[in-house]
Length: 251
Length: 305
Image 1 (spheres, each protein chain N blue to C red):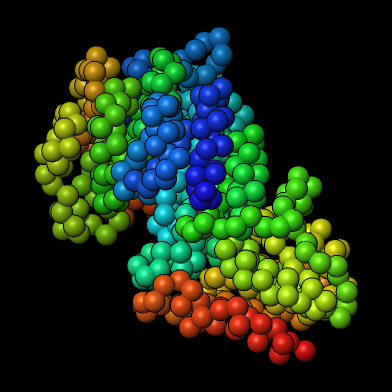
Image 2: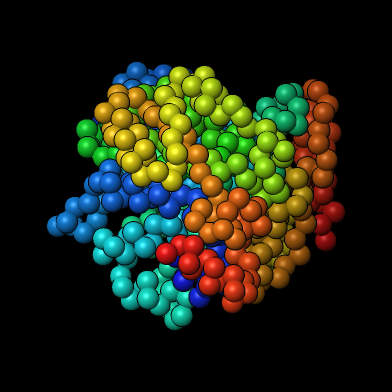
């Protein structure tokens, strides 16, 4: 992904690196089930923080859902891939970008599957900044009321929004007790520890209710230049030295 | 019967054989809705008083190839959830029909929070939406059936009040056109274009002066029915009557539709003023006070040279 940021010279690396292990756990951990015959996924993943949808592209490339051509051309020649995901991109289940929409949309999908006895799950990844959107809480109320056991919400909590720390800008804590106050199971995990994430996702699969994973993350994880820096929400030009340092960090 | 009951009854009938239909309400009711809720509890979804989440939930349902109807009071469904409408059915071209009840001053005397005088302009701006404003039950039934047979991103503006059926009744051909013409076009006549409940005031004026006016019920404003231009091109003076604020209302719609078709007659707009209305007195009193009483419309028509 870093190579792609260097080529496209835009995007949201801080947000992508914040949720990389979450995406890897979902897909390579087998929670999002892949149908080899259809070459598509049985379950849905909605990236509500649409500016980080590109996190999924290398994974979808691994599964052959995104073509080698589209992946290789991205940032160089004509490619179907975009910074913000949309439904014209293979494997991307929703057009997102505006915050606060996807728990509701995921809940709609989950209702449809349950009503039709379809064995399908929905995973929604939101940023903690989306907890500022009223529609997020409206949808959480709905998900709990309907006991949407096939819906799992993962909140990527890196404590940063564009203008600074959430605790300084507008306090969100305690997130866990707020979610639990709605009657929704909420479990805190290290969002960069794949074993922890896999274990929590397994618990969600076995649960009979809607679940929420509070993934404690670091914005720009893996890059000493980007980590915990709000200005790395967006791509910024890098010196040759910074590029070398980041490449080494990410090896 | 009210327009909303007509619409919901058609949905209930169709639900018997089509379980892909979902009806979502933001805590807004109707006599006919009680039957739908009772008969088809799996297909009725109460979303709470949460118009934004309702549109997002509808988006998820529609992405799974369901036909979705969302239902709420017009001022809240339209303006509160407009970004959800853009990002869901708009951006992804999803089959979601928004049923918006209580347009114009329908909720008089609740005051401006409950009036939907800007919804038409707002939804005209949303890419890919179709907009319908029926004046009677027959037209409402046609709209409901179109949406049930081929659900699309649409914004249907229903009146809160009972509206008499227009005579002569709308027929299939009129519905396909998107408008209905009353009277014969003649260059000496003035064309009156309107929709919704206020169209009935125009109808009263027309019936008393059929030699002076031609009346057009433009129940489908978007996509604009270009065919209307060929029908009315002999006329060079029009009055557009609309229970909305002036900016972006039916007058703008007709002006843009005509000019797109290279038709440039004189157009006078008759709408509510560009202000929020706090007075009491009921809908008819307010319409009269703000220049949309039958006599006011007639006076303005007489001045139209």
